[in-house]
Length: 454
Ligand SMILES: [Zn+2]
Image (tube, rainbow, N blue to C red; front, side, top):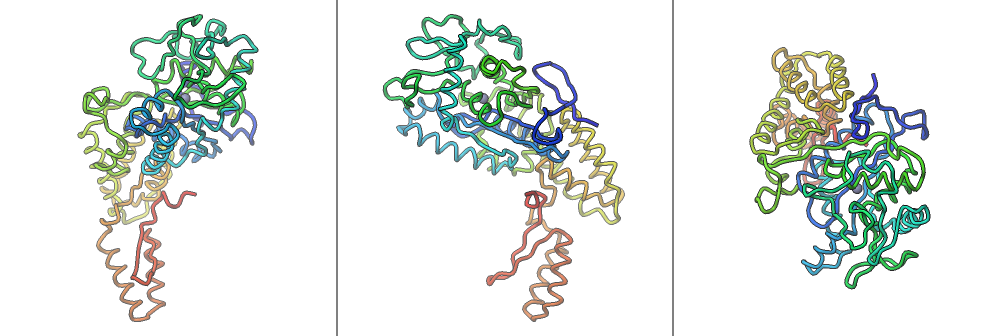
């Protein structure tokens, strides 16, 4: 079986075939648009980054080596505006929110990104790409910077089916300038204005436009063409369209990217999330109310391409499901056959990463354990590791019997009955409990699937 992926570019689901190079057809280069670091990330971001985290974990589970690259937009109009509001300098502000973003990702257990690439570390590559676009006649100069002439790129619009922004575009960052050749032309290099950060370059003092950051980063890390590009749906136009126009014009090679994957919108309580509606939720706020396992389970209960509605009810449901699945662990008394369950898991994930089917499967598996006493925990743990969800009960809910074993072992140590204590340690390990003896007494942790992965 091969993995089939829905591709925004071809508007079809097709078998996933990596490009050649990097070792027997099992090497994948994936780029996903990262955040603009001017504020805390919200649960809409969580949706996208958890979705790609699960996708990459699954590809690795299936034996692929994935170079997962993400940019960090650490210079942008939004950063400059926020820095002015708060009285911080841009670098400080971007640094603060880059750190906050990485903390949020750790808290969300998004561990699959191999490299985070801040745009400001790629200024030379950005300048180089703008120069090439000028030489090739795709770019022109205006008073306030350099622009891309979309009428020169025949296939402009091939990803999105559009060539113009409309009022609905929330993140289009339309570059308004007098003298643009076409309404949709976008800025590649913004000329220095007093009070703004700048770099000295052969294009003059200035800073990068938004779209060029990503192609400069991907060309540096991957080359002009690569396997897959992801991001939230609202980035398709003009951001991803612009990336194609830049890179394919420069390299003359197409397609720049073989597979385009986009995540659906997240709404809160059925409405678009916004600060003015009072339904804006940051990742940290969400994780104060809910644990990461509940949140991840809720997010993957909807297919990554579909819109998702974040509600109290959906979260409560997810928490209850998780509890039901975890409780099934205790029901297992006789060895069960995990093979058919794993086969069904793989079949669901191979079909464009159908996580809602997997959630239903887990529920069915737990039900089976509750009903028949079959122990299917190895299947549960294997699937949990790919989903980044811990199906062990939280530590404070350790079964009474295990707590008693830990206590008994402490007593044995006090009596210096080392052999018996060691034997009990092995018994506990078999059940997934790691004990450590410290001068303060015995500490213990649950050997979660998470901590076993490299
Ligand atoms: Zn991007």
